[in-house]
Image 1 (cartoon, helix red, strand yellow):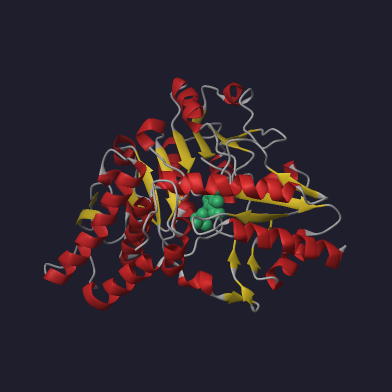
Image 2 (cartoon, protein in one colour):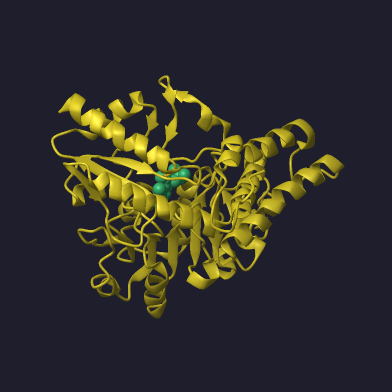
Amino acid sequence: MLVKKDMQELDFSALKQDFPILTQQNRNKPLVYLDSASSAQKPRQVIEAMSHFYLQDYANIHRGIYELSELATDLYENTRQVIKNLIHAPKADEIIFVSGTTEGINLVANSFGRANWQAEDEVIISHMEHHSNIVPWLLLQKEIGIKVKVIPITDEGAMDLNVYPTLFTPRTKLVALNHASNILGTINPIKEMIAIAHAHNVPVLIDGAQAVPHMPVDVQDLDCDFYVFSGHKLYGPTGTGVLYGKKHLLEAMPPYQSGGGMIETVSFEEVTFAKVPQKFEAGTPNIAGVIGLGAAAAYVQSQGIENIFRHEQALLQYAEEKLLQIPGLRLIGTAKPKLGVLSFVMDHLHPHDIGTVLDHEGIAIRAGHHCAMPLMERFNVPATLRASLGLYNHQQDIDVLVEAIYLAKRFLG
Ligand SMILES: Cc1ncc(COP(=O)(O)O)c(C=O)c1O
């Protein structure tokens, strides 16, 4: 178990033991993992919770009257409690397990949206959304004729708050925004933006995929109506995620998928549905994954999310200073406050070519459009390189990255 030296510092020798994968090699060089915004590595505690469940405690949940099934149910339901605490939700039954942020947003679009919206109704999103917070709304635009309105962003990568309030009309039905951008790193002023939406009686969905692993989140303080995030970016397993929704909204929404687990009674004439959250968890869920997600959230809490935030902020500052000294390097996303996401391009060099050189230096970094093509267009670039930080990164990782970028410049330039 990771031991804290004090309230501010994470203990890296203990961290290395928690994340054995990070002691491996990448192309015969020590692995430098800088792709946590895409997916985070998993601590031993998460892997052990899942393998212990499969080895010792496995059974289906909510069904069996035998001890093993009760135990599995308790372990699964315990994660709901852990997640409730992590994001300060008022009630555990406002936590719905989904396969990830993508499914959480699709659930809201297809249940809340389809049940309540008609042609000409409007949804406000921003220019810095991930495709998973764009495409579900565009599909509804195509299918039922809603309009998608887009908040522009500044050259630094902040929401244009002058334009945002002007987008509301009596037809506005939802605002859907990311808490923090996966490319720019910008932490958006969502509390203020939610208050503006509520002043127009418009509910707000927040895509917290990038925020939850890196900063404290309090859904009651934010007063958001829906909040979604992915387990795999929170040091948890793939195929897990969370949709938080205010109880009265969830209760009024029709089911998203149907089958076993989400009903109360079924006859050939009539079906009645289980209460929230079971109404939205059709079929046998990802039981081991959810148990792993609980272990991941507990792991993050054991480190202290404030400690993680402070650590990554210090590292972000160090990385920005170092990267900006490299001639020809341009950071995309300089608005503050921001998370530890460093997107950049280099004069005359293609991001994929640099990414290939970095890979040969042991560095795992993403090059591409990062599932946000409209944002690439906004900054007039085909792709960027993106180094993204996790709690296990430290200054040495940045030093290796900077050295390797100089090498790529010499090699490719
Ligand atoms: C801001 C944001 N939203 C949504 C997603 C989609 O998450 P997932 O693929 O886990 O569903 C991501 C993933 O990178 C993201 O960064």
